[in-house]
Image 1 (tube, rainbow, N blue to C red):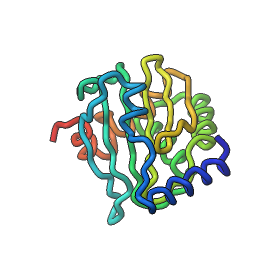
Image 2 (cartoon, rainbow, N blue to C red):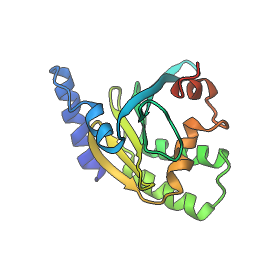
Image 3 (spheres, one colour):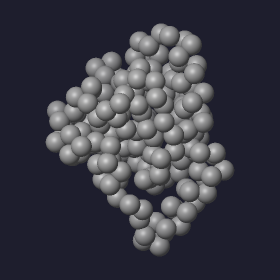
Image 4 (cartoon, rainbow, N blue to C red):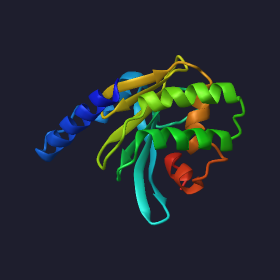
Length: 177
């Protein structure tokens, strides 16, 4: 979806939220991709003094397994440029140990096309499907997908790997704290 269209969707969602009208619940589109989706856990990412986003992990029957479908939902609490989200994601994947620079560059280009600029209140969700694809949503609208089956595990490891830079958030997402 082109950035101009995404900005239009963002403005519409924001205007509807101001009127008290919310789009289809997150559960609707998550449950269509994740059978029996239930929340595993949730937490907030704070960087220095800034609250960045609230995160929630959904998996079948509330039991997360890396090789089964799941969804990670981020509800943003501040304005962030979409390209910076892609840049940071790439950096985090490298820090997790993924070293295929050719793939990383391809993924970076795809993420820059997919990730919109976000404002407070925007919800982005990544869904790891049973086909090994990663599908991204803004609110309940699909905004892009990456079909490479290696992408999903590398991307979601940013939050769910033992090597994450945010171990307390990981514990909360996995429901262990």
